[in-house]
Image 1 (cartoon, rainbow, N blue to C red):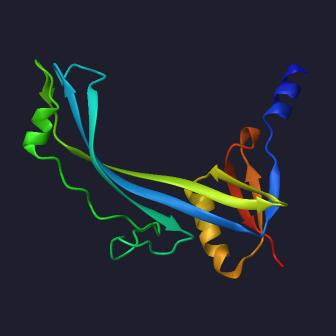
Image 2 (tube, rainbow, N blue to C red; image 1 turned 90 degrees about the vertical axis):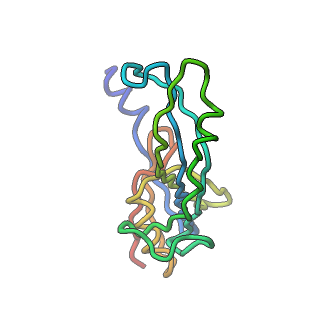
Length: 161
């Protein structure tokens, strides 16, 4: 009985919508690790330098994005300026050594949709983003599968008209 109750509490729900928008926030960020001994320190201090981002909406090219979308259909911003040696040294504490600057790529997916009079924006994944990008031009209705506690969108399936 206890197992059945736990499954009931964590089950997923669904929603049907005709009004939706998917976004993918792509970003580049320069980071540098600092530690007294970078080789042996499992948790170095991390400093973040410049960041740039581009907001992809429904697969359309955002202003300021690079010329072509990548292999996943995502548009990326221009690269932020690499931190200079002076900037890296300014953030170094006594006895610390600085690692090499690392350029990180990140994508955050969200889906905004309406059900009745309510509008919701939830985190999602690449697969849902791509499904919405394909359905958006024709405004095909979507069946959404929501995650645990309805805190995310796990799946989007087109509903034939």
